[in-house]
Image (cartoon, rainbow, N blue to C red):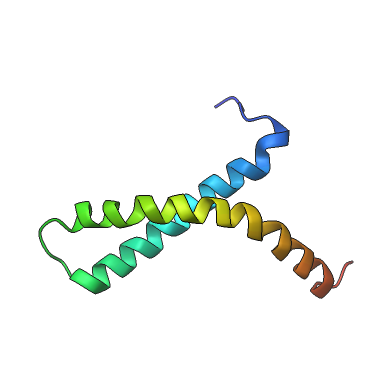
Length: 78
C-alpha cells in the first residue's frame, strides 16, 4: 500500500490507531467480565467501545507528549 498520511499528521494517526485498538480491547474485556458470554454481547461491546474511543482519542493526544517528556528524563540515552 502506498503511504497517504502526511508526516505532520503522523502523531494524530498514531493517537487514532492506538486509542482505537486499546479502547476496543479494554471495553471488550470489561464488557465480557460484566455480562459474560450472553446473546447480544457484540452489540453491547460496540456500544461501550465507541464512546470509550471518543474519550480515549483526545486523551492520547494530550497525554502522549507528557509521557514522552517523562520518559525522556527517566531513560538513559546512549
